[in-house]
Length: 317
Image (cartoon, rainbow, N blue to C red; front, side):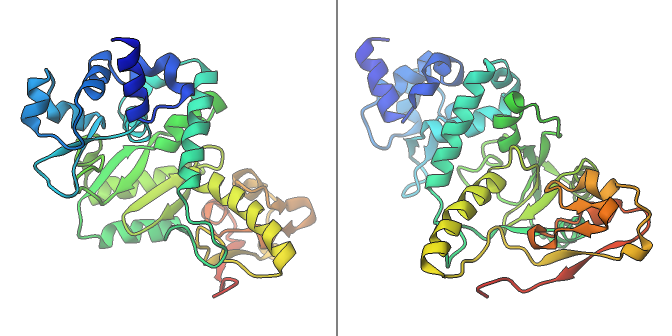
């Protein structure tokens, strides 16, 4: 590949500088040449074949997408999409990269993800909400759509360099339209029973559950883009509230908060060990309810039944 072709590929594919050292492992040189040389905004599978490649293979790898305007045509994807497909389908290859490279790629991906969020104080960026394990299982059992299981892309991206030991196969989706990982063949269909078991196992592993219209995720704080974006957004909006004295809608949506019956507490300390936000001071029989998001991880593990969740109404609603 000539330097000009390399430049064309990197520009067209919107590949960041932090990826250049490992770009050949993520996008093959042959794929790079195709992207550099195929000077069309949209193209057919036959044009890809004439260029020496398979459109289906490129699509499965997230190198090309179906065109929204014409399902018989393809368009080039971008590095953001390809990296997402790469880490969930070839995460062992990704984990072999130097940790500093993984960290740089993760931070770049998160920055793009975060910049794409709508971050006005009176609107949530998405419909994501914190739900309990029981609610997650209930949603799965009530779904009429096929469930698909995939590797958690957040944990695949960040877990290798930050030492997260949480399971990877935890993302459940009910989407299978064009340009989704299910349609690309990256995720696999699972039964309702298997999907429910994945949620329960994730809960036992200390992962909290979030959901929107199409997905149920099982999240840790260190890797989860939703949790990391929540923390950054809250810091930004806190500064705005302090200057404008205006409320904002917290995100993801929280509908419950912990309630402790200290008379039934046996001071085992399980809640303090399980809580991802470190809200419990068992010796003092105290819990910071204001910062609770109602994930139910502590409730499900309490051996004495001293913990429960109460419904709350959110500020601004």
